[in-house]
Image 1 (tube, rainbow over the protein chains, first blue to last red):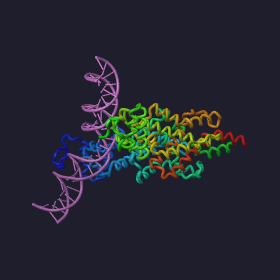
Image 2 (image 1 turned 90 degrees about the horizontal axis):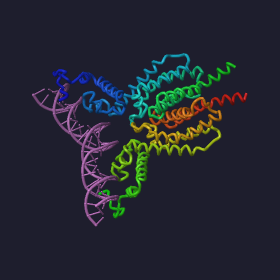
Image 3 (image 1 turned 120 degrees about the horizontal axis):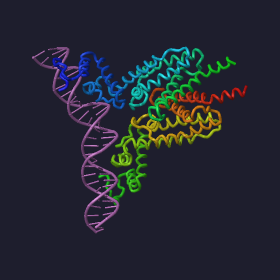
Image 4 (image 1 turned 120 degrees about the vertical axis):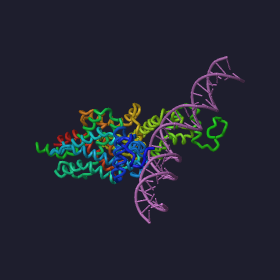
Length: 229
Length: 229
DNA sequence: TTCACATCGGTAACAGTGTTACCACAATAA
DNA sequence: TTATTGTGGTAACACTGTTACCGATGTGAA
């Protein structure tokens, strides 16, 4: 039963998912990989990270678990692809933030976009930064994807430093890490259930952004103040 | 083999762990609970959070898994006890920080103690805040334990607000959350492998503390400045 | 003392996980 | 047509959390 490699048999009642799997198998493995990642992504978003299991993915694909192990080495390999998928979504979220000549406002907007990503794609967030897959450590490709997603933030800080609005005593990368980590901490504690409801957590988040940017842009503020006097 | 309930039999070669289990069983269940938590804590520290399994704990105890389910409802119940154990260690770490009349310095010292806790008890940290047990959400007792551990930080912020060194526009709890979450974010990203080696991560951590405290104590700094003029 | 009852806890199983050895089949090459 | 290669499904292994079962043990009453 199940899979007869003979193509003569009509589609019958095996369903559409099965057909796409058959189609992809006739083409290159790259399409098949994408199909598996999509199936896994669906499960991730519908049922959360812990529901993403090799068997569930293969069932949804209509194939055996062997396929997943042939295409990706193990579950972690599949998780890495999902990580990169999440990076794309995050980058997309950042892209939608309008450019602004007010760099402080721009920073706040980017921070807000990061919060929104955590809310709209909580399952992805848990997978990527939440330690949902205990064994998952970012490899070179993952870090590359992360940096690409974060490039918008990096460019902003760099520009602000060049314009003298943010001190250039610290390395740009360090400042990005500080902002990223601080905001991540709020989101992660909230997801973990430590910061009450979404409203309270969002208040903490926004206040964290304010405090950080106050310090970062402090030189400018002081300068503005002395100019006003 | 294994457990003969007859006490006439001498200790034989069953080992010391077994004897303590037998002893505790003769006493109340509270001692037995503590013994189980200790065994689980040993595994946690020796082999990490993912190694803490019901079977491993029961093997180390020299009893069946049933005991764990009788004493704690399920694995999560045991995890909660480990969480509280971690709170004690964290509180202990905070206790060792010397009091200081310089509240800013005191804040930096407490922050450093939090970092040290993450380094010295990484397994506990992962269990408590790292999401190592995906299903674990802090219940009322866990939150209570967390607050007790954090009380040192809470008192400090409260005092600084009363002395006018930190603005009292924000609620004390909110400020504590901001500091906690930001520092947690750095530790968590570092543990997750996103911030490079310990040295680089520690630099980010310290800089985060500096930026935050600069904003928090900003009013005072401005005040000092105007007093000097 | 003896006997019924209740409780405690060990055994063995269930359902689920990641992973892999095995082997039948299809496609290709000679 | 035959030999070889490789793809992929089946079924198993070693784990996990969890629980149904049931014998043994201790405890109460007669």
